[in-house]
Amino acid sequence: MMSIVTPTLLIFFVNRDYTWGRGGLYAFAGSLLHTQPSKVNVGVGVYMIFVGVVALISSLAAGKKLAEVREALDSKRELRNMFDMHDADGNGSLKPAEFAGLCSDLGVVVSYQELVACFNAIDKNDDDKVTYDEMVAWWRSWGSTKLPRHLGSLMV
Image 1 (cartoon, rainbow, N blue to C red):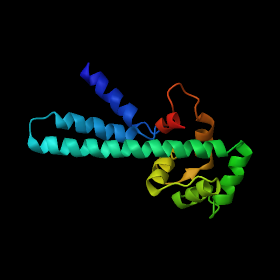
Image 2 (tube, rainbow, N blue to C red):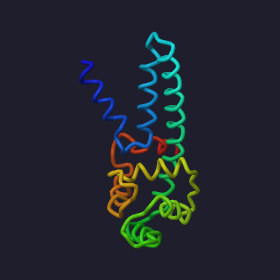
Image 3 (spheres, one colour):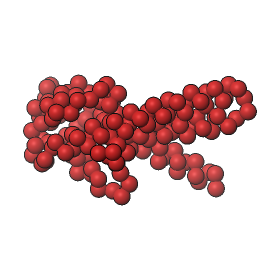
């Protein structure tokens, strides 16, 4: 049973569709370490739980910001126009600074931590840029599953 549950939990926590996945993974791993009898393991476990909780709180804020960005984009045409306007170098993708400009122009103010969480939630292939196709996939999938895509969307 343990061999089936652990990989399933890891896949769930590391799934990039959820902004809170990494925080959940840290909190889960920290709770496992915390139960070990060594003082070092307990200390590291408590630290990992703390990091996980901070990441979860940041992801709630990032989820709210993603909801605001999604609500500000009324149509696929508007998404394309905003994307092209902020693709400063014309390479067909947005870097984090360009994505921050897009959020700002939509009236969504993001902190650095929120920007990183939002950007990583949309950037599915971890190449440190968001392509138009990734933006469209995120835009279309918002709220299309029974489990909320971004935990923060529950707070909106």
